[in-house]
Length: 111
Ligand code: AMP
Image 1 (cartoon, rainbow, N blue to C red):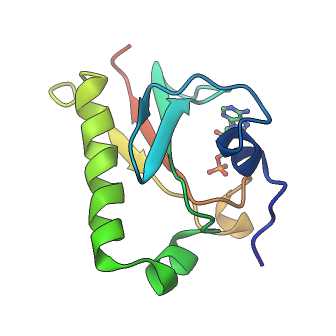
Image 2: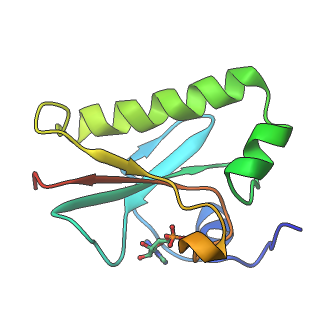
């Protein structure tokens, strides 16, 4: 079951301050608090999905498209497309998912 008190749910409800570098109808994006690369940004869907399994069970195709499109748009906005970037998606505690709200990491060696 989705935990309404996870840190990203609180950020989305603006109970915890965060500076969004991108926002649209489907996602928000902000810098990771503990960056693991010179550029490390998170893209977080607005709806309460726990992880990729939950997302693919519940989301409409249109939403899946828009969320992935937003990940690529944020990479463009960060100007890391030419340098290259990784998109990381941890699914489940066993894979290192700490925050139980679906999020995509964008990591690039370009600052
Ligand atoms: P994961 O291990 O895939 O669940 O990733 C969670 C990420 O969220 C980690 O890289 C954390 O550094 C990051 N994080 C946790 N709290 C915050 C916060 N308040 N603002 C920004 N990033 C956060």
